[in-house]
Image 1 (cartoon, one colour):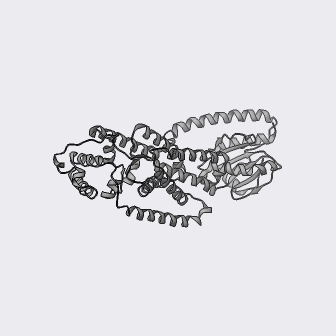
Image 2 (image 1 turned 90 degrees about the horizontal axis):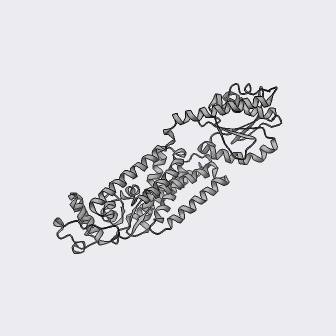
Image 3 (image 1 turned 135 degrees about the vertical axis):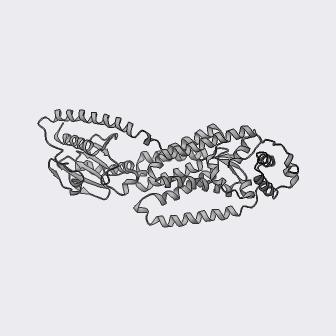
Length: 438
């Protein structure tokens, strides 16, 4: 035990007791203590050390990468404050970090002194460093325990990603509604189409382009629902911290639409549903933010992202999974991530990305409008759908649907000569073809 280590502990006590910083646990950092306070505008992240100049110099790349990982979007605006109690250390300053030597009564930075009054008075020599160190350690341990208890009580609900939870609740409510409708109609396929699943026949024949969006909140079965909600919760939790609420919901909704738009252009008549196009959009936006703040340079972050992308790519190749919807959602998320992430180094890139995104959206819309022909998913599905709409009492909608379908069928093929007296012939899940999940 030496005075330098005691000074570091005294600084730790000062920042926790007087400025509400929290101590972070970082593996492999014996000489460094990390403190975080996201509410502090000037120095949200502080590293306290007693390492030599040579050690600091070798660790600076790691310190900046770790700082980028901990600060996230803050990293472009604020530097990491490194306070060194080693008297042989040298004061240095760059855009992304400030290295400052501190000693009893001495701190060369007026900015640091202005932000943290009495900082230099917080550290002082002791006749018995071991005894003082043990006393401060016990005090800090008790403070950390009290702080954790207070945070659990005060921040209990704040830990829940409320926006993500709200979207999950919408998906769950619609799943129950579809399930109830399917029991009534004795057909999952008909229930999903009626509730707004992506169905190319209705989009082309009746111009129901709203299905590009509504399909994202519908799910086929409980496993499909739980798998997508788990993925949404995982990526949504981090995206809520990275983006504003408006940005988050914009990325999700536009990615769902964009993914289904890609599917509409690239593939034939399918019954498609699921929110994974939006999840892939959030994933693309989040990966973009990691490139923007430099966290992608951290080996652990980079390896985790590669594993995540590989797993999701393999899932997208499974039978019955819509690769085009995933691809479209991911591309949309990357574009919107570049537009939304606050990064000074991308200021020149952002206008070009905005123009490219508008051009891509315009080209996709033009190609979608040129789709004028569609093969039936199965004629029995359309016939049963028309009869179900009529039986449910939606007469005006049934008339428009009948007129639109007759552009692709003859009356005999569709079987509507006596539709007013027809009974619903349910199309069961096993009879339909071309169902695709997202």
